[in-house]
Image (cartoon, rainbow over all chains, first blue to last red; front, side, top):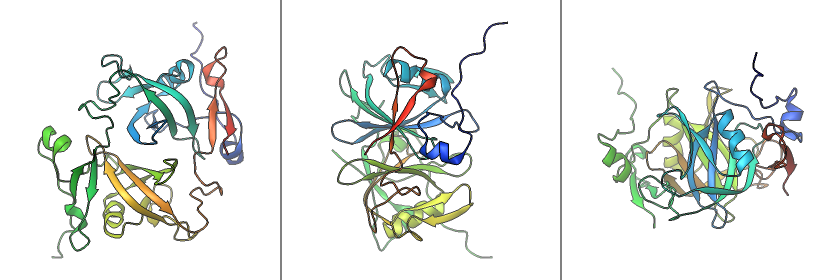
Length: 142
Length: 142
């Protein structure tokens, strides 16, 4: 029999999960964990994507962001086609270790979004306080 | 019959979804959308949580962050008990409108995390390049 693939460990108590010094990531029912990517200089949120255990391990190993594409059902290295690779300067997890935050420098043309925008978050949500909040407008932020 | 509760509109095309000027948020199969909260001054990620349509509408209406608690199965206004309310200065959505990013000022003691930390993201993930990436360590960032 082949060896089982290596796995991330689990925390045994809430105290260990929240205060411990071992990375024991928690994946959701689909085996995924959300990843927030910010520009390590400006703090701008560049993108949001999902990782499975393999993508997370590869990201930790290479310091280059890899994700799980839910639509294509495969691992992808961000920028493998566009050249806009995310080089990670810092990775952080949250209190219950079910989210990761990547601070990164983007290479190539410096474009994180498939639409050609620098960040996927290029539209501000605007509401008129007198109006129905379900009818908000979007405005490009440049 | 009572009126149906107001709903968010939907985009009819990918072009409208990605480039349009109407906010047409897309909720997942559980009716939820992820929300990233950053400190509007430092850019630090403070927390990550989920909103259902009601929490999102209430957030847009009040400019105070409301979320859906998946464990307690209820809407909560962040800070309703702790006093650490998130006053939103800017809300942004991403290319396919399935994530929201809130830039906020936190009131009260300025503590976003239930553990008492300012941000939920208080531990950096450290890897030894020679070691198994599944055995990463966590170190408090202060």
